[in-house]
Image 1: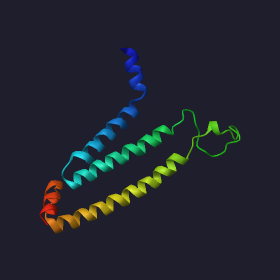
Image 2 (image 1 turned 135 degrees about the vertical axis):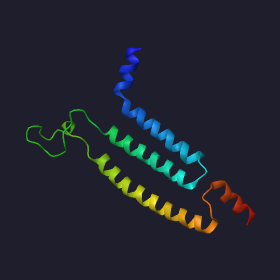
Image 3 (image 1 turned 60 degrees about the horizontal axis):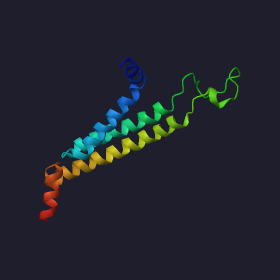
Image 4 (image 1 turned 60 degrees about the vertical axis):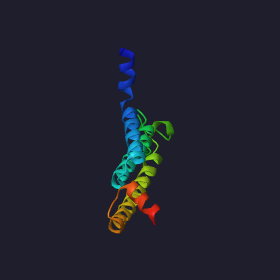
Length: 126
């Protein structure tokens, strides 16, 4: 039993990431309200960002600024590329969320609801 606890305690970040992935995917796929779907999408995106950042962590790694003591050995430094890509991903995620919220406002003004099933029924009637 203690070995299971040791394994889980060393990987708690991965468990949180998996929980966020599951929660975000569940909310995106099962919720009927469009705003709740967008919240689920944001949670899912956050889990993906955490996955990449956690995967790029190197124990004992230094900031990627060449230090004369460490030399130019790439094993001594942390790879900055995943962090830069996640910054780009954050900008895209904010833009997508902004456009989606603007579309939700237009949908609510046009149809008076943000319920997915009511909107589908409205489409079938017209």
